Amino acid sequence: MPSKFSATPRKQPKQARSQATVEAILSATTHILTETGYDQLTTNRVAERAGVSIGSLYQYFPNKEALIFALAEHHADEMVQLAQHHLEGLSDLTIPEVLRQIVKAVLAAHAVNPKLHRVLHEQVPHREVMQRLDEAKAEKLLRAFLAQRSDQLQPKNLDLTIFMVEQTIRALIHGAVNDRPELLKTGEFEQELIVMLSTYLVKR
Image (cartoon, rainbow, N blue to C red; front, side, top):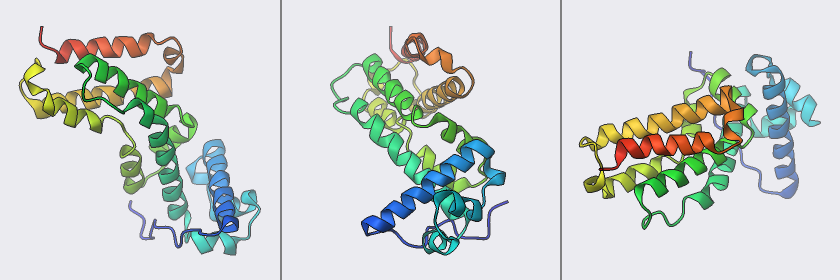
């Protein structure tokens, strides 16, 4: 059920001291969320863990929903920053080379605090949080690239092709990160995913 409360933070920190307070609050939120789960997260517990008064917390976050939303934004920003260096200069690459860079970017993004990522996706019942995390996905860059290379693609329905590739990348990487993290250590999973997608996409 959607919350009747706003998930928007009350104000943004501008001074160094205020920024340190907000960082402490978000760090405490991360710890409680990953160690005990969403249901055990309360603003009082966060304030106690962060070493700030509940009044100080409420200056920035009016409720639990605002805390979670701010944490999801922070997490998504970290994912984007880590993925960026894999996603530059793609225009001159072949389709398999672009697939490799996008898979690498998504894997790098998911390596940012995977425990927090899993909890946010599995336990937090707020649609706006999930949408914010989805904005951090690198697959969206694939859409523009494949649209420019449609004459090189084996499938004819571009919209369906993009959907198939996006969903395959998302589902398999989520599954590996959450359920089979050992698959990500050797590079074999990455290579097999690229081969599978290249076989589907590229004209022979």
